[in-house]
Image (cartoon, rainbow, N blue to C red; front, side, top):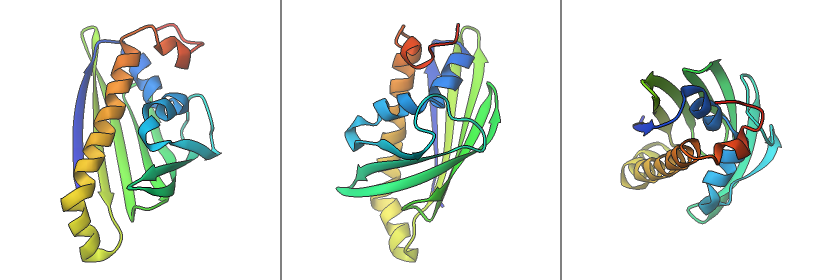
Amino acid sequence: MPIINITTSINAPIERCFNLALSIDLHADSTLGTNEKVIGGISSGIIKQDETVTWQAKHFGIKQELTTLITKVDFPTSFEDKMIKGAFKNFYHVHSFEKIEQSTIMKDVFKFESPFGIAGKLFNVLVLTNYMIKFLTQRNQVIKKVAESEEWRKYLKDTKF
């Protein structure tokens, strides 16, 4: 099972970074290249523990649907989600946040498994792992850009970070 680790340093308060990472609206805006849109579950705002969202997107030229469940939230230091329906055999994603002086270190640990046995494992090695690293890194760069500017107010209207 491939495991991807990504660390992003953000010059913004931990609470802001945490909530932006849970923002359905920011996720949609950060994935414009795959035309992600919500087709079920929580459709806007901050997703919470035990809530689901179903995304429709185009990856590898194929329209796909993916439903994730937020399984654990420990504000503002971590949350976890897992796929409950979709193209992966399974995936589990841990998001953690650490305050370092006036900045936040955001870490992603993304574990996934593709279907189709040996063919799926080969696809992981040749294509999918690098694709997911790029996808998650780009998303994190959007979170960073928004958190470090006044743009965060668009997504977190009722907060004062």
